[in-house]
Length: 242
Ligand code: ADP
Image 1 (cartoon, rainbow, N blue to C red):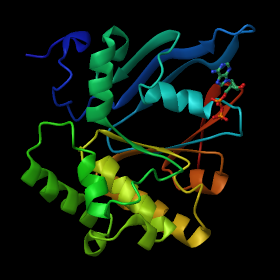
Image 2: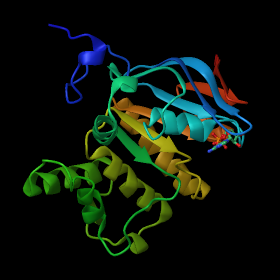
Image 3: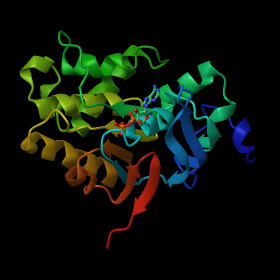
């Protein structure tokens, strides 16, 4: 039996044809004064397995979008369905649980613990889950292999290149098996060679079926997406590529 969307439990696995992200008239106005319409009411559907980039200049509303899509902030208008779950109807603790379970975040700064190995950094992401310790280690090793760093599991972050550090951060985001990899300027701290290796990895993850969303001000990075949405003055518009 199919439950109505809003009644579907937070832990239920999504159907393959249920969009990962569905914005219906979602907007966010900061109250001010003066009020700032940082994200104008918009519709956006991201299907499972898509590689979507969002591009816009500074101040255009990218972080606001990321905060709403990542369940870090609540929209002031519209409905946001994540994996078919109507997030606006959830109490705070359920939103937090949903975020932890369904979204893997990758940020510009890698946020790795410097005195912990790559393996420990990835394993720690599962600390507050019910996954048993032995299974956590197995999954963390698997995630590191997925990002091409199986052989560097014992290395401290300081012994890794910037690109490798970001790949550890991506392994940490993947280890909880999220529905969505939400990346905020993932190459912003990297030189072009390392940026290229991280973007190739995101491309491989997409090819393997992961839903990837990259938010960036850099049009070259944005061009790596299969689909690009531009944001300007808080308004989203789909970029049509030939
Ligand atoms: P971007 O990430 O593209 O640089 P932001 O989403 O941070 O853009 O900002 C979009 C707009 O919202 C900007 O005009 C910014 O000044 C404004 N803004 C961001 N955060 C707040 C806030 N907490 N209160 C009021 N205005 C804000």
